[in-house]
Length: 133
Image (cartoon, rainbow, N blue to C red; front, side, top):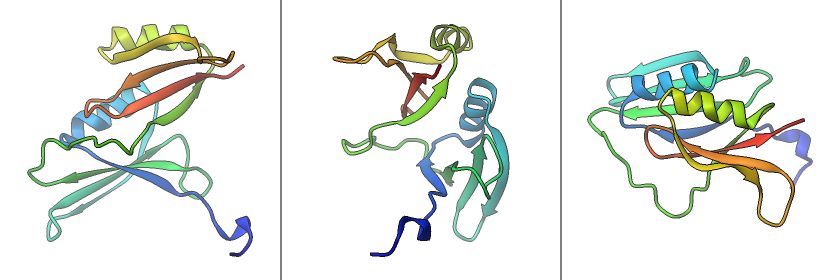
């Protein structure tokens, strides 16, 4: 295969059951911005791209809403998304106050020193928060 410079990581896609609820979660709670949206009535889906910066230089999150599908099975292969935060305790308290589900309280990773926590988005996708100094 060719060199790594031939590739760039563009986005991760998650299927969601309530598009506006998910957009609110990622924008209001996690500070992402809606970058673009494409509604495709003939295909019966809508795509929304969210992120912390423009798609030319940042990896983003694609939310896909398939018309009429309100729930997806998580399966056992998907793990989590990961976000760096400067103060994990304050971030978790802010998220808790906003109604976010904290599924693992802040603390050191097992057998290590990195401080992490886990939250869940409205569809149950796990998001790891990693404290970055």
